[in-house]
Image (cartoon, rainbow, N blue to C red; front, side):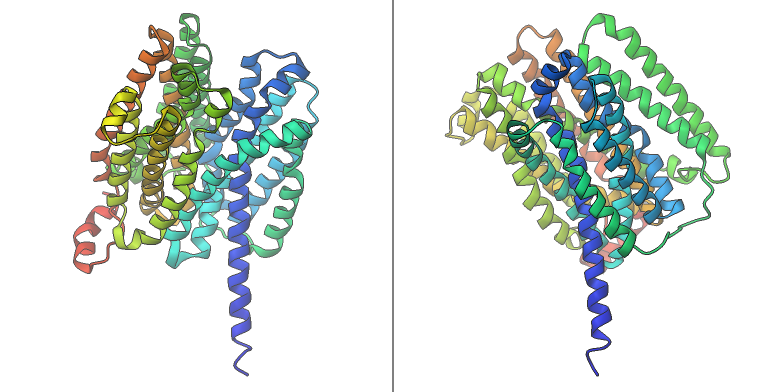
Length: 482
């Protein structure tokens, strides 16, 4: 008699965790597809007789697509329901993965990669919304754990991709998404409850188009600058930048007048919202920008082998995973600001240290060789990212908890835009520097100092929950949008 109420509760918990796993696997696919394609460049160029910049666009166009529509996907998830948007995105991502595997030339591959990016753009914001719905009392922990999933993809992607390409074909990189995508579609269709509409389904399509267009032209301009870094590319990059700013101005003007804006006008005017987005632009420049150049730094400055240079980022990802998991479980005790400040200090120190000579590394107690020293510093930066990222994710959501997916979409866009800015600026610095060593020193020291200057932004963002009630009452007024 006592077992009957227990069984539904157990099944309900199992359903929640299976859905959490499905959301996590979708993020894993997204993270892996960003990194796996890079290892296939030689095979792509050989089979299609393509130049390296066309091969590079197979990655760039994916990020452009993700960035330009991620905020829209978050809004659709909040208005039309998580299940509808997630299933549609999984369907598009899976179908375009098949098309990528069948692509007859590099141009169609780039087009299908763009479609694949459109499908993958909703995975993070929609997953954040689903997880927030399923675990309302443990939202901070559940959302924080998502950050470690993305890093797992960063570790698995290059290694699995290299093995697949060596054993089979680069096309298999896309084919492996098919069974995974189909299984996820079936499980989500069966387990996730019907459309959870958060508001009347009135979507500001014109506002969404303006915002996506602004992000699209900005990313295209930054990608062109990063790819060519020459005087001839400046007019096109500048034109794209001007178009992006104009579209953004039209977007803000439109949002103030529309009865159902994508982003609440109070949110657009709030200092915490501006601080949170600027924070993610800067950290995105460090996460996706600065540390993307570590393999090139190791190869060109210290003449390490291609293999060693390629795997030297692995300690960073391995450090992020446990750090983000531990931080996620302690957020309710620590709040958001302490982990963000500590994380920024650690990452800034690591970035500044990379800009110094190896002799300086030895004076601060690093007795290893060049490979060990770089790996240790990179791992140190991973600890910082792992500590700061779960807190930063939740601090953004705290601004408007009823629209988790929308806020997560904007946050993700800022992160990718920051990464594109970081890559573009470092490319220009390296292009103008007399030697690679001088260029990397300027880049690392500059970004390390910028990360330090970002710390004041943390105190404009929500403080989060603290252990002591008195502390909560003091910070509560700052946690809401002013």
